[in-house]
Length: 83
Image (cartoon, rainbow, N blue to C red; front, side, top):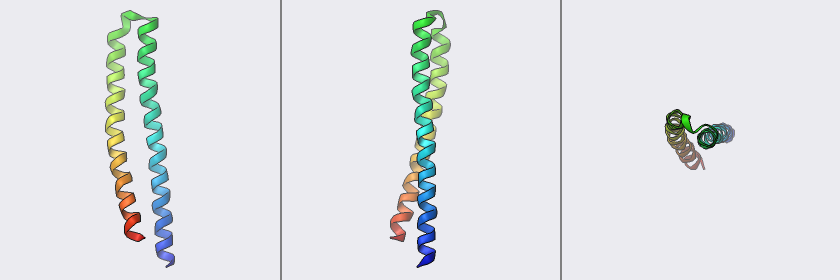
């Protein structure tokens, strides 16, 4: 019984860790979009560079989001299996 509880605690901590990373990725994505808007407002001549940088940030955030979502799903399935 104790091994199952330890495994549940480990999985719970792993789940929480992935949620923290997901929050950081979402913040990075939001910051990327806001920086694009700020670039366009303050220096319209840098719009192309702003679009490029924002695109890179959004691609990174999207890929990271999908990977983290997959990990969260696996952890959730393992927790269901232990219950």
